[in-house]
Length: 354
Image (cartoon, rainbow, N blue to C red):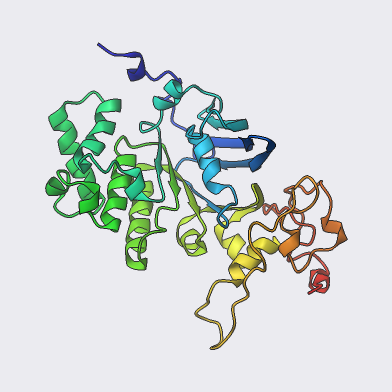
């Protein structure tokens, strides 16, 4: 007999096929703050908006502390309800996910929405074999037998590039290498062929060779299944090789949005320019020094008073100290930026006060 948890309580029209131009997920003015005893709430995400279409890979990039992971966890309903205050909307196939009960969201997580976390060792249960962790998702959301679930789990591990999958199903997470643990986590996320996959720094703990293999695997799965993906990362190399559209976040807000090639060819926000300037380039002259962004992500001012990046920006002046900075197409079409002195603005070269 089916229990309440077995029923998809959050109703979506699963039979209707979305047009490629329609948005699978629309995040509108999402804000997240955390209550702190005896202190003002800490604002981690401050009015973030973006959208994802079927089969599209959208990147969210920024330094640690910019609000990327909190944004994804708010969408998935994984933040602690006692301390987190979430406002705004996240419409998935027409239904707002924000404010839904854990029971309603559990009917979607794993079946329609899935997430690959940054550290597979802490995301996988260390006392359960890999096979049980994969089959649990399959049996939770599909009406299949234990034997069929195990066969499907073995096929999933094989497709994710794990050798000898039948043996790996019997092994525990500590018996797998870092790359195989991450592949097992991807297999769990893709078990029910979700329509939206959120990847939160999925290659951070991996060496460069394994990183490339995991990214190629994710790219192939998106192409084969038509899955939409949100790639959260601080690595612009990952963005350059994978994403279609990129949202650059700083201090809880999106400061620039553009198509991938447009962003790398014509960065507009001074923060984006700084991120790109701090990356080693193969075409740079020998001995050319890097140009890191001065200060740290903690050197910010509230967006309500000024541009949060102003304390670290060489181009900041009195015009940056205002509270009405909007994300607008101020310089290039279809390339909104939240900056008083965009890179391509007329006379921008003369603004440098360094």
